[in-house]
Image (cartoon, rainbow, N blue to C red; front, top):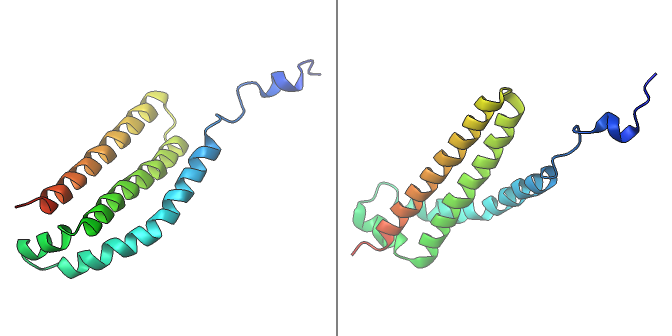
Length: 126
């Protein structure tokens, strides 16, 4: 016979209070990626195979440069969130999970900053 209250039985086993926000954020980035992907792919495909001058001409258009930067940022943020869920679900040691989450964040930020820098360098090349 268990004399604990219902609250005592589930203490520490409830929601972390972040799941719904994380879920919504992933859905919103998914929805945002649909038009961003289309707006990114068409100018990129047009510039693909061209020389530096052709690529520069495409991305000196502010709309194309902004779309490329948004695409890179939203894609990597969505990727980071997805990997976070996989890491939290499948890596069981606390130290290993923490290290993997930190590595995930650092790698995604490094890739994002590199991508933004590359687009800015092309867009502002004189």
